[in-house]
Image 1: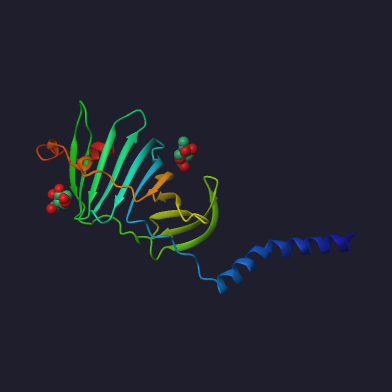
Image 2: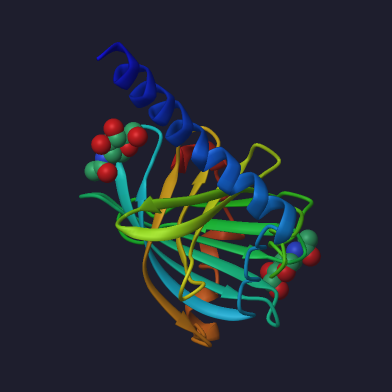
Length: 198
Ligand SMILES: *[C@@H]1O[C@H](CO)[C@@H](O)[C@H](O)[C@H]1NC(C)=O
Ligand SMILES: *[C@@H]1O[C@H](CO)[C@@H](O)[C@H](O)[C@H]1NC(C)=O
C-alpha cells in the first residue's frame, strides 16, 4: 500500500516535470517563432476594451506606403472619433456633428513600421478568444497574440489595460483619401487632446 502510494507520487512528480522537459528540449532544438510583420496595407475591425472598461469599435486602416495610420473609434453609445496619424509625427483627432472638435498633436514619432514587433520576446502558446496563438511581449508595452495557423493577429494588449480584439482582417484594403481630410476647424480652433480621452 505504502509502496504503491510512493510509486504514484513519483509518477505525479515525473508528470509535473514533463512539460518543463518538453519545452526545454524544444527551446534547444527550434528557434522561438517570430511575429509576422504587418501587411503594408490593411483594414481591421477591432473590438476594444479600454482601461475604464468602456468599450469601442475601431476601424483601423494601416497604410505604410501612404504614411498614415487611421483609427476610427466608435465609442459605445457615444461619438465617433477620428484619429489620423501621419508618418511625419502629426496626428489629427476630430469628431463631427453639433459638438464637433479637433485636436492636432505633434508626437515627434511617426506611425509603426510593418516590422515594429521585431525583437519581441516570445512567451509561448496560449488560447485567447478561442484561438491557439503564439504570444510575444515587447518592451513591457505590448502583448501580441497571433494565430499559430493563419498567422493573423487575434488580439493585442497595451500596458495599462487597453485590449484590442481583431474581428476582421482585410489585407490590401485602402481607405479613400477623401475620408482622411481633416475638417476646417482643425486649422482654426484646435483643442487639447485630453478633451477626447477624459
Ligand atoms: C473588459 O476588461 C476588463 C478588465 O480586464 C474585464 O473585467 C471585463 O470583463 C472586460 N469586458 C468586456 C466586455 O470584455
Ligand atoms: C504631416 O503630414 C500631414 C499630411 O500630409 C500634414 O497635414 C501635416 O501638416 C504634416 N505636419 C507637419 C508638421 O508638417
